Length: 168
Image (tube, rainbow, N blue to C red; front, side, top):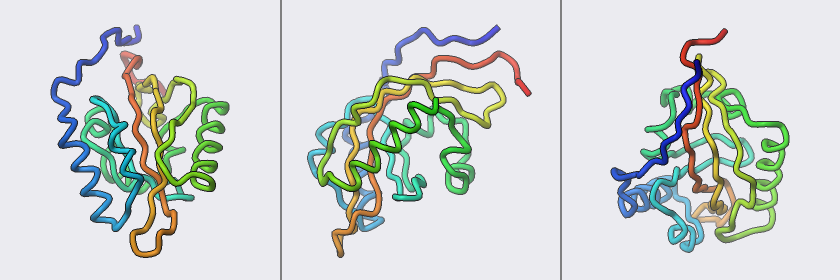
């Protein structure tokens, strides 16, 4: 029998100002900057991440991501996103196209403009599944050169399903 989550999270323990400050600190530590408007779009419950581009390797994730993910820091650091997570080919392609478009054409924070979709932890033995609401994306610039080297994203992830026993 699968586990189905029918509860809407309250995010009572989500400290929005702290999450924004931690994201700013992570950007500063990496000598990166983003459109300041991005921070105004962050909402309670958002998963915040920074990725290198074009590798699409995660270099920062906030506490909400870590709370929801079953992966270790080592897995997240060393394994490509496409090995860790699965989404339909249609949604994966739309995400890659939107990321590429933003990196080539945008300088500020813009909506993802992607449909709500499912994301599965591929390596999880019970295939944890989340409903993803991609909200905002902004390019990250190297402070000294103003070169685009990555992107920051804000999105919501709701755990909606996993099998009640490991599947092979």
